[in-house]
Image (cartoon, rainbow, N blue to C red; front, top):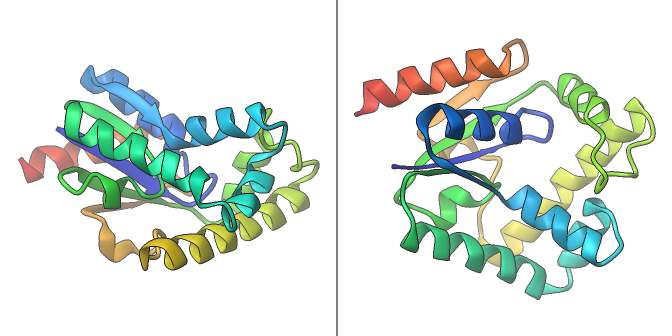
Length: 179
């Protein structure tokens, strides 16, 4: 089984995907990690790389190709990816939702080296908004889809008032019901 996890920034995608992979004994992949690696190699933030990707299609192409290859060549893995549902259509597609304020608090509290522009809670909230706008614009232009539209997903969970463990429990329950 392949599980793709998408969602809003700060919804817990990476945390939940890693923990779920471990619980199920599956490998874990993250396009956020792929993008972070690429941003650091280029000496820029993820936000800067996202902006550049609006004009430079090779950035998204590299990320897309990596996901398609994983979906075709591997099984039994979890990937947190905004577009995993699109590039790995034979997956169980999960969307993690979160209140914007709660998401910003999580992002600011978990400052990553590739998100150096989040110098305050207000900056984190504003940068999340810009990132969502940038991704919506880019994905609509390239693929004709909105990765934040919940109609694309099999399971949608609001993580605002849930711990990662509670989210994983809910996912496991949903998977057992579906199988």
